[in-house]
Image (cartoon, rainbow, N blue to C red):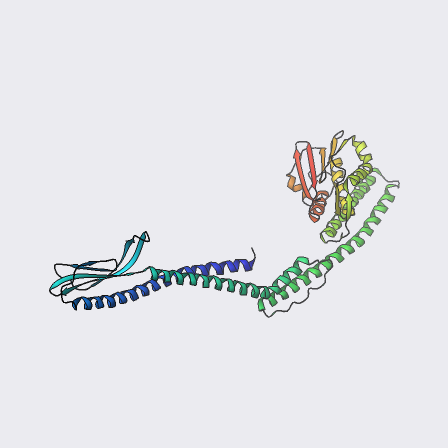
Length: 418
């Protein structure tokens, strides 16, 4: 929910509450004023009636009408009695509200009770009309306030949304400096300054990290290559058996160090968005190509390869080099961690690639496979970065990477949003 909508909702609810309370108070005040006015009219009219009756030469007869009642009583009572009552109207077929005044008088030696009534229909009609007018005025006021608040808020929050748009579109690899957005609101000005400071720091850190990875890639690969070359030369020399074994261990360690270094640099480059080129990648053709490349390893382990293609048109737009790394790591793991004479099943659909292979049961939880330097078998020469690289690539392109294991059966699925 947007802030403006939430604010307007609070305004509307609070205004409605105030209107209801104020409307009730206003209703009772108007009702009391109307009854007071009617009571004064009844008092005035009844006094006139009494003057007319007392001016008669003969004692008056009893009268029983809707609006005036005159009856004889044994003795008069003091005071005036104001009451609200309802009477049945035969013509309207409904009860009509009345305000009545009752008092007692001694007229020509006879005590009388006089009751004068005034219909409240017109008064209630006026009251209802006033309340309807008040409600209409309230609705118009709320609508006007909402429109004014909406237009004003859009102007006030324009700077905020401009900052949000810049942050949403910000790309650390291409943008250098965020423009300063002027505002007469101190909070927005402070926010813009904080965003500029933050993006400048992010950009500087990115450039430093990029420079470091590039330098590390160049400076470390050269000595490693020299070490491996010299070790190869030494292994070709006439050495004692223990010396040859020592050089072999050093060579294996340098190879692991070189492969780990390349893997870490690759992870850093992926996370720093340094693979920006994207092309449509045919994963069916890519898998077929890699299987042919790994055919010697497959034959060495005597693996049974089975491909089921429900669709041969699994095409996804991404960086081709990263797609190659993703499939290579996926197939390498399935081959390397397989049983001799095991199986390797590959299933294709229009949006999924599933690789199923036999292999030893997992020693750790499946979640640990995607962590860096995580190896199910510590004795292997692997650096434990293959699955981590796969996960980083999948996260970058929103490819759903899932793993399932049942005893000696392992299944890895890539779900593409095609």
